[in-house]
Image (cartoon, rainbow, N blue to C red; front, top):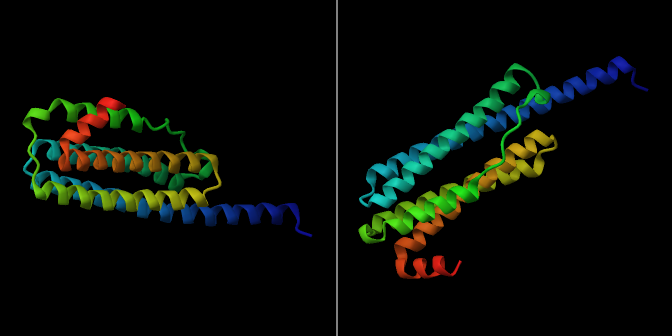
Length: 185
């Protein structure tokens, strides 16, 4: 039988080990978001169309928000433990997506896609799908309610980014069909 002190030491060591695993995962997430930001900034520079440039600049700013929240969780775990993690607000990903789609509608007259825009959107989509998958895997492993909420927030954000990029791809590939579908919804 384990003594009460032994039990506390066991739980402390187990919590420390879980903290270290979470810290390592957050380091990966931080690098992933930094890479995403850099990818989007490069795509914004390389693209010729105004809407693609705005899309990638928007996505780069989104990555800044993700980086900020990941750093907040990371710094909290470095300085204390999982019980001190902050509560995040729920993601407003659907609102951001709708707002972006309304902007797409407003530039109908100035739109002229290029093949490089399609390539850039496809590359961005692959990146976002990878990030979404990574956060889904982390969510499936999470036990702590704050960590679960954190990964749900990240996953919702990445899902919105994928939906946004898909919307842009559909807009670029067939604007008429894109507008018809928007009118129906």
